[in-house]
Image 1 (cartoon, rainbow, N blue to C red):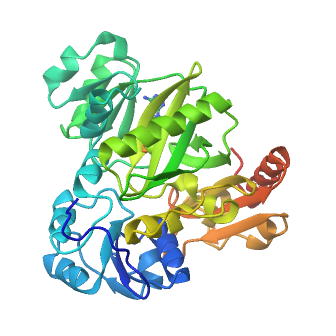
Image 2 (cartoon, helix red, strand yellow):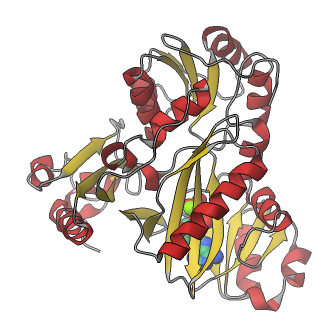
Length: 391
Ligand code: ADP
Ligand code: MG
């Protein structure tokens, strides 16, 4: 973090820079607009969801230095919604204006080898793993890791770039399938369930932590988040405490998501996201401050908002297969019947205006809010089935 441009807060109508134009960026743009800021989005996709509603959309690659110069010239500060922005891009922009989170934190979170090493070196609980850079690393990996998951170190998301492997031979095969890309080999853990913590941290080190959410996945992609998680109060508290320690060790400024596995009652950090998190979408509808407003606040050096949940919430992701008759790419393409969802009380539908639906692509989500957590969950699951998510 450069001290040359720290401290005094950035106020409206300043323009904020956003690297990445996906749905997380789109919610940031909405939050920033609500607060009186303008936003300049950089994303190579001319149809990017955030670019569509930004004040300016730079349609350019993340290493296009002419575009970065324009962003630096027009913006008061820059943040990101996409963890794979090259660290060099963040370092370059940081010469001219505040970049939050900084390049170091993003570089750690965007590479599973750096991430796992960070967790180990800082004494954070994590599952057993080995770094795989060559065939010999597979041969020498501890036999106790199998059955395991082999994950490419970079650019994996939503379960992509991962292979479940029963033994060493399968691990070697998968490593070759990934063309010898550096990987981590993780012991396959038997999960009671998964939780995540989203927090915001400001430049002075103050932290506002949202309640932990409980996540279930479908085909490697987040499906449902229940917030607050039904974990014990003790587990929820320790997940928050671990996430806060991670943010501190990263020198993090902004909104951070930390995913955990719960195995036999014990917490293990799975991964970190240097941005708002899918499991924190419900904060728009159920908290006094959303994770996106917090991102704006941390970026601009404003005091963080109160993270209190005023309602119980359940979020359900809406993936691209819903746009196809029968739920597969062979079916006819048509818009899902949104009226079905709007019939449920307390349901808030959010759609990302993505150009085209593909199976597995995150197209939108809905959140059900209410006073009674059991009723909220029952309503959300009924709505999920009614719109056509049947497994
Ligand atoms: P990403 O979210 O980037 O696709 P994750 O590492 O979070 O990658 O893996 C996606 C999901 O796969 C996890 O949320 C979890 O459900 C499952 N998973 C990943 N690693 C393991 C593991 N070591 N043991 C058991 N389940 C795992
Ligand atoms: Mg994950």
